[in-house]
Amino acid sequence: MRRCNLACAYCNEYDDHSKPVALEEMCRRVDKLAELGTTVIVISGGEPLMHPEIEEVIARIRKHGIIAGMITNGYLLVPSASRS
Image (cartoon, rainbow, N blue to C red):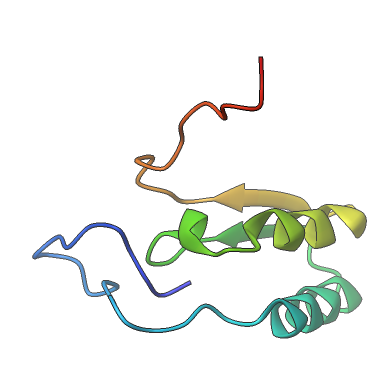
């Protein structure tokens, strides 16, 4: 994910216009990393929580038994209204 919800002057990863990588491509990449024996995948960006299908990407990583990590600025980590 290249996009970010912040615009930090020092950051070279900021991008406010790129579309997220398609889920099909992300799954292909995860599958290839699993085939190569990867044990940990860390998702970063930009802001990975801005990817509209981030939960599916993480599920694909976990399906392979790979540890999923994420580097986030945390601003989008809020309680869901549907969770009690």
